[in-house]
Image 1: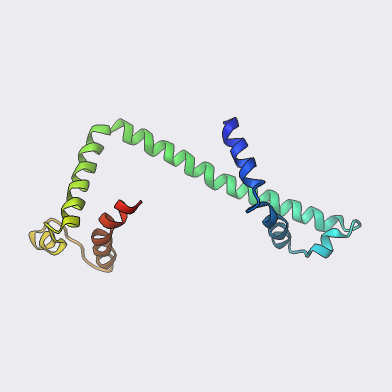
Image 2 (image 1 turned 45 degrees about the vertical axis):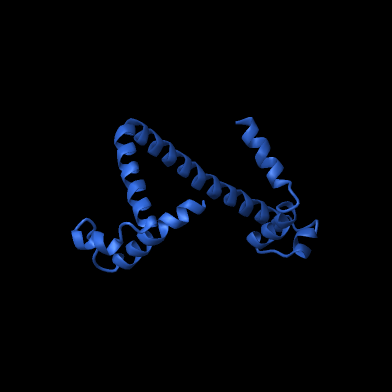
Length: 138
């Protein structure tokens, strides 16, 4: 955990991120740099601090929720590891057959193996035709 924190600090202090922070904070607070530089205007600084804290709170909430759901999904897949391996293997085989051209998606639809209707059909057919190729790239 300490290593992850250190990596986050190093990433934040990198030349790509650090110069963006003042502009982002002033945008979030709704004040210009001239407003914030005025030492008498404590309200502008407090507003910038509050906006920054709420941003961090929202960001943290989203990523904590994502981490918790990923943990739950991982535990579920671990519990049903054997079944997940069978389903995953079948999907890989189907995608391999689609990629090689040995099986065409229209043949699978004609055989009744794939039944897609409505507005979702365009998306699903595009996904089934392109996913095997795109997954080999990543």
